[in-house]
Amino acid sequence: MRSIQPLSINRDFTFALLTVLSILIKQGSDICINKSNNFYLPYKPVILLILFLLSEEKGSAGNLLSEINSTKKEALDFIDRIDQSKENSLWPNIKPKLFYDNLILNLEKPTSFYPGRSTNFCAYGALSYLVMEKDPLGYVKFMNELYDKGEAVFNNNHFKPSSAVMKAAGSLKFKGVLDIRHAEQMWFLVLADKFKGYLNFFDKKFNEGDENSFWAATNLAKFDRMVNKMCGVHVKAVGSDLIKPWVKDPYSYLSKRIDSNIVSLYINNRIIHKKNHDKIKFSIPTHFIILRDISKQDNMVTLRYWDYGGETQVQVSPRTLKKIIFGIITIDK
Amino acid sequence: MIRQLFITLIICLLLATSCSTKIVSTNIYQEQKENLDNIERRYEKLNPSNHFSLAFTDKKFSIVSLEMITDTLTRIYEFNVNEQRLADTLLKYNYDSAGIYYLIRKMQQSKVTWINSFDYYVNDQPQQLIILSLKPVTIRYIFSPPKYVALAYFRTTQFFDEKGRLLDSRRTKQVRKIKGQVFYKITDRICYTITDKYR
Image 1 (spheres, chains in turn brown, green):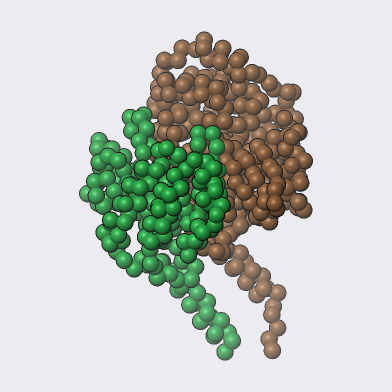
Image 2 (image 1 turned 90 degrees about the horizontal axis):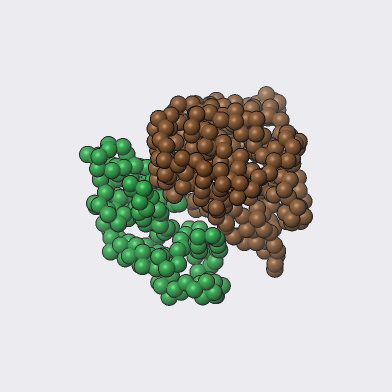
């Protein structure tokens, strides 16, 4: 009988890993990470895996800035004083009326942020929710300056989007109500252009349609970093992009934290929002949400969360809850 | 011997993965035109009062995922079609139970896996379209993705290029993609695409 050589085991393992990853990337995912048409050469998944292994998942990120706070009233007063009819050739597709109406809507109804249908903007949507909680005036000032000058600073983060991004803002179509929300289009595109993680390694430069591709994708570490830098708050995260967090009872863990913190979850949305009838599904996270409420009755957990411009309520078993969660991000209120 | 068997197995697997799923019928819409149009009309009638979407999440069309959508909250529930909870839930939230049960039965008969409405914008004005996905009979190989036929029902006449692809508007030659898919003409206001996800 021939003995199995360690090398062959290694090769088999690598082959299996490659196959799984390439299928995984070919299949893409749903709401958050969609497949990119030019993204299925077999070496790319390997490099992504290496980048994932090299990327240090920090448990927590400290306060960068002192407490930032402003009120909705201050922001509305500021916007009242602006000339809202000015056009700007730097942003050829932005319509001033749609832009400023959108800013006012963001202030009046911060939960209305809509990252668009079939885009990879969900992480930026969750971030917007946090920014509006912390600093609505900062958001409006930043957006106005960005529109006027083509560059602006938000909490010491300098944004100077590429000309391709500036051209794309205001021209995104068939994304639902995002089509007519020109400020949100600008905001999401500019955030995706500025913040990069290992998922963006092969697609760093914006091309038409990249809002649906890996250019806009966000991994857990990138999300934590964005929240920390943009909101200047303490962020604590458990979990990762491929391995679920070591939390024995997610329900207890979440319910303990939800009252005193803002809790964001990085979940596999394909389990609660099935897209096909296949029973075997690759277990990867696809979506960022803001958890608003959690309760348990008759061994069923009711989750109420914010994602696409509104709240969603869903009932899952404790087992499914454990299955869908890949990252729990706890943010100071 | 074992080695040869292993290589043969690998070759078979590679061949199997390289084959894509084949849809048996090439004329699904025409074959079921009456039923499908009836489902779309029924949904269009029920939807405006209380917005909802329906999806069958199992292959036997016995588990239905119901999304009840309001401006502020979307409730997602999954029921067995025969469960009393479905009727109770529809009643509780003032949905037309009889109408939705009729729709569910029709969807089961025609193998419609999902129905929903979408908003889109023309000259900054909101428009609506209804999408329904069908689970066709397919020849499927191991590892090949599933295939569904998605039908988009527009309310107004649409524009297509010489290849029958749905265009953004009359004035442009830009192909309009819905959920990343190119749609092809069936009639002036109905088009289809083949996709590996039903929603």
